[in-house]
Length: 169
Image (cartoon, rainbow, N blue to C red):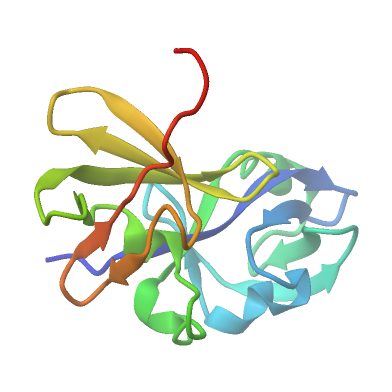
């Protein structure tokens, strides 16, 4: 079985003429983007960071080994950058890597399986779980302690208690 990979960033485009790229970083601190070792792309390329500096919030300027001109940098635009899950430190208590949540079984409070987590999104107001329900529908659940009181990574499950709807439906 292939080791799970974690998406750390996406190359937004070239930066200057010396082979540097702008990377939208999904790490807490863009400066830490280079702390996890070599990166791989969707097509299996392995990229080693030669130079890195934080630029604006959530972004870093990176030069990869072997990339020395704008054409090389332009060819990387849009590439998603991954590291093996094992390269990341354990999350703090109450925190979870999105990659660890995707694929978990979703149960209701009675322990009945109602679906699986297919994605985790953040549209600006906090994390939202996308749940593919067993009946073929999809539901979005705000990832809060009230809505998701149990997250048990080792057992491969979460328990959801969806908010009750009030008012006319």
